[in-house]
Image (cartoon, rainbow over all chains, first blue to last red; front, side, top):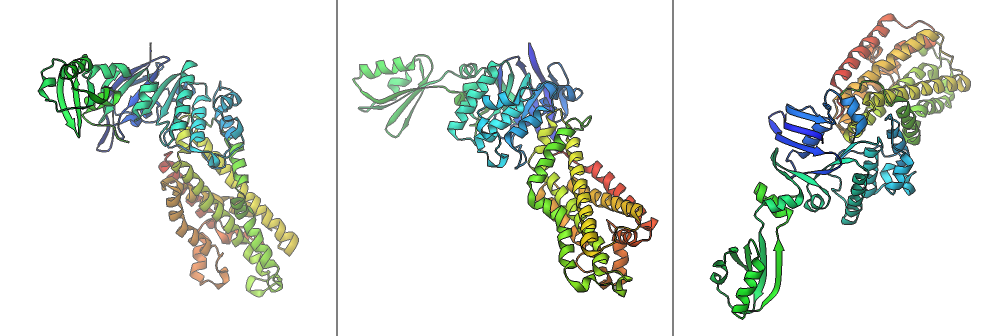
Length: 302
Length: 249
């Protein structure tokens, strides 16, 4: 059963269309990714879901409620981690959690959350003195302190180093294991691929595709690339006449043969027949990155 | 994004008070500075002698209401708007808006703390002035309280108005600086009012927080109703403007 339904969402700021036409549903208990380049309308979309912005068109339903009419009810049940939202410098970690816990009717235990997020030692540390990763963990803790059914996490790992990013990913998986439905806004392919059960690819205010990461990769031509350095001159035509092969490119001394099906086997057979040895042979398969380029016609940029 | 109630007010007041007390510099500037200036002036013997220029009062007594202007101006025009603009700039207000707490509760908590600081500062000034330098207690206590409350309300409302339109802490301070200087100048803080031309003194009667009404009620005559009415008018107009223009983000 879907816990979030977004239908033909439209939002503009003055003359600028931030979200043109976005529709998707989120099922209970999944990690749902909203993936797209900066300025694609991801944040505006989830802000409408969170009830922070009023859409200009379309329908949003969260836990069967309307985020505009039932804002007060939803704030009890939806935890939100906002991009670039900070706390007062002198507020201590423990104080922040206890303060936010006091806002909810049935909050989670702040002490337990602090332990789970590895913030125990930072209990009395002022916000200003926390590292980027610690601030993010506190921010996640604050999004969870109301014991929400849904959590919206916006650009959670932006600005974190790879180590802190991996720790955060493990954390998100643990949150999902507790039964919380998560909407994750991101522009990191690796993050989307690793965490999301399904994701909506958004570009220029529109949904380009909604699928699992593997499904998105399968959906684009399942391209395989064989890259190698031939030991002797080899004619491109030897490869292009193979049914599996679509293109042959040369970069430097390397030959790159692309196609679908068992390209590797076909290429290897040709090379063996012509007694050519392939050095530095590598097989590359389509990634979510390729799928994204295929779907949007451009590369995601940070 | 209006808060439906004042959910969270109690806890916010408690936490914000702790944050305020932790910021020792700001706290001393608001609560202690006017009394410190009073003490420094009071140590000069000549300023403790009754003088016909001040209707037979001492300079210290004559100048004390201007020191109250310092407190109200620093707390209401500097500390409060900077705090609110900083909270908005850093997304603290937005963060609160995602919880069941009402951002209005935060605003209310900030106002209560600012008022408490101003009252504490005034009490300290009056008590130290009385005990150390023989500055008489306000002779017209009710009138003094009315002049003080209305004058403070007018300045706080102006401060909130600026906080309402300034997007960042820097912008708030930039808007506030000239206003702050004018209020201090007309309040006789920079130059004692007896040195100012009559016209400027008259203007100072009507600029918040209304130093003449404070002086009148301190030295014995009731404050003029017109002075109080003007303070009320400023408080209502600026307050309404602030409420209308205030943005949580």
